Image 1 (tube, rainbow, N blue to C red):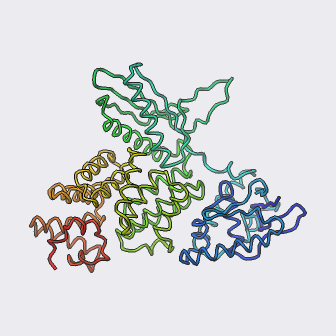
Image 2: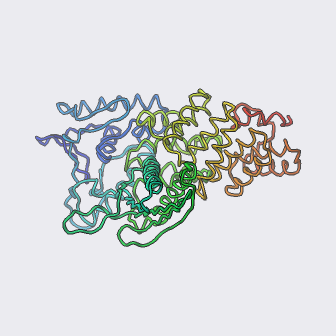
Length: 529
């Protein structure tokens, strides 16, 4: 058994009191990262990102391997406590103990009482992480000592479902499908605690956690139509947050998908807006939710902040979906700004999405992002479509998955299917932060079937929502030229030059300019050079 105390100077003690800690700063930093992670485990990508953010993937991997060798030598007869495979590095939790015993010191709090007080790793990513970690732990330590890191972690958001019906078979079937669809979609986004009923206080039965949302759904069927009402409220106080009623054709699977998608979006919005009521401000699910919204603002500051949120979310809950969204974010940065340098590391979208797929090859969100990057990276178009179809099959409520499917279909000339998928994505989106992104995918699908008026409408809608979103602006220039709308095209060109001073329409013909789909649908053929 080896042990490490969080507060004070870094020291790993064996049962005889000997210090088994390695000497180098990187090796100590690596052990600190593992000791503060859930289950004492982190992915290799995460460790490289924190300790060797200035190196490419190959050099970072080599450095990590050498550091693991150093740690094993320091551990000596306890070296098998350090476990590593191709994906993760971990400490055997049955033989490694982390304690949170406060350092005895009179007077006010001092640096010597900080968490890992003498740890200093010269990497900006690690420096930012250890600063935040020390601040968080110091604040908790001032209040009281605690025994395990999981006690200090914010609780995962709980969602309690309760279904009511008029006992007709159609109503019961709708309720069952709603539970299946919404649960699958929510779980793929974040690791929510989902319960099939709302708890009630009972002295005879231990209570379930109630710091979450109560979602009540009532279904009644009359003839061919079903009336469905949902309400979202605080699970314990009963405070009402949202409600909605809809009538839909009982046998329409598409209508049910739309309704379930609306419910999922309402739950996510309520969690974000009522985070203080629900005491979930710093949980991984909320950090990731905020990050996904920030991505679709497209500016550099929002993308950088989103990347930090996703990194922090992964620290609290190492879900591969967060790794995949970091890959998607980098692709968006390249597409929007033609650079990812402002994100502060050299890790690529490809490395991140491959890591996410290795960790979970059945997540619809990861499959969808994998499909998107496969196509844009010049990979197999049919492979991209297969991944996108699987993602949409597993989670038909996610509008991003559906938009990416639309683009995968477009590439293989399945133009009518592409238009249907894009339209469905827009219906599922509602008023979400990602609507501008989906409007743009609708623009591409409409342009592919030569419905230029509709394509212009979608692109203009995207720009109204996000004026600095460059992708629809690029398409508008080509579409206006296609339609002979010279004055509109000139205004759009000037607008894009404010964002890209070197822009001319001839840039569309350059292989390195991010208009891959525009080339495939030959929209640039009318661009004057």
